[in-house]
Image 1: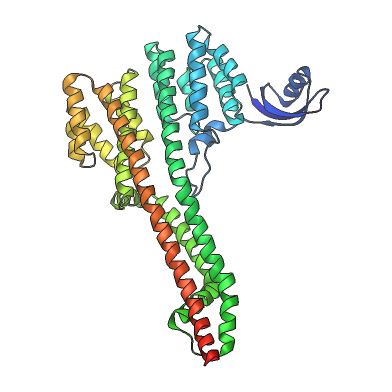
Image 2 (image 1 turned 180 degrees about the horizontal axis):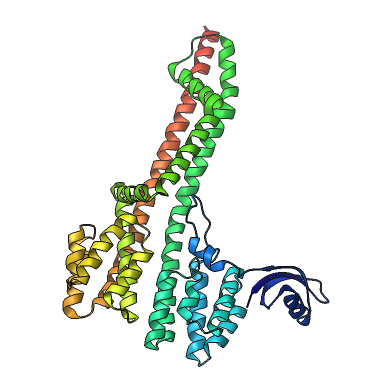
Length: 412
């Protein structure tokens, strides 16, 4: 059944509202809205082509927007879903109830579409897979494992915990880098404004004196003049450079080289390795806890790793496991996972607690990432202050030296 997004006025108050509704045609959708005392002002179909658009996602685009639904929104919806199912509510009724509890329009539309597909006979995982920009491969495969094992409520609860943790870590990282990012942008804006607006006005006075200026003042005038004349070309060059880079990494060969090179960037490379180790361990451990065997679980891990260099090694790891080797040895042979992680995986295999050990590894690296980000931020802040201090000192000297020189001549 088609799904329609609508804008309407509430009868009596005239208040504007919006939402989604399912109906066989726009005329029936309008009729349903009038029965709810709503007068529609706009109706458009929302579900048409959602599967294809979702699958294409950002393919073929150099710049793309997200789904508009945050990880925290999905985590909250998932936890509510688990509670409803645990209370004994049938699947379709639980999906109906979820629509009334979420305020995100895109998520509500997706849930409505999932409900219709489940009502038509599809299993829940396949219906969720029709919306890959909202429900990730990890989400879909965990739900599929829960459906197969009859433990969907427990799996959804575990999935909500995973999503909550992801959202928390992301929020911690963003809050840590927000201040230095603001300071960097502010510093660049101040320097640009001073060099293109203030400095030219001040140096005009010195030029009128027709006297020899100190070297530092000449340098300041030259830089300011260059930015005034060629600044727009410099910005255009940077834009073309970024665009070229985006085109390059949109190609498979370029993306592999870029993803490999990122590990060599000082500080960032170490941080990226820890982030990917945490994602690998938590996803694999969660999938194993949900009832998947090793190879299908590694397939899910492969699909959620957004680094082509890591994915190349994951192919070799899967091949090793397929030949009957334990997980630790292919991880060691890849040469990209830290020794500590490999030792903990070996310990988990020997003790028969590999799933729990993988979750413990993920917790360890998540905490390590947080500490690394704090350390990097602690390093960036004094660097910004020093750079600003050098610029201010350079500016003050370039302006004061000619003034002192002119005052000396006048006094003489």
